[in-house]
Length: 57
Image 1 (cartoon, rainbow, N blue to C red):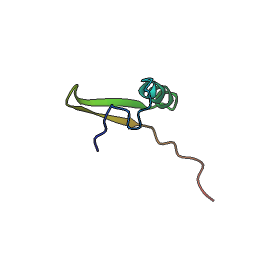
Image 2: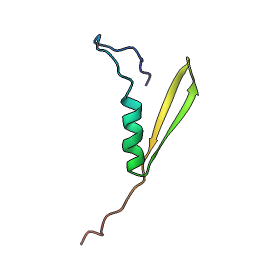
Image 3: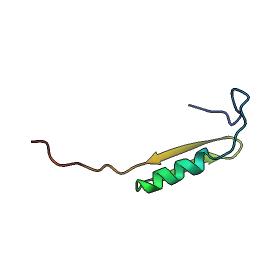
């Protein structure tokens, strides 16, 4: 999937989306990986740990 950095509905962009996402992901013990070349498209991967809860009875 490829997304555009141009707002779709004419709304202004604050550029906070990735910064907020980073804080949330790090708070959950995860990480964000970036692949690609600037100007050619980037892929962001979010990796979150899996925590197993108590065993079901």
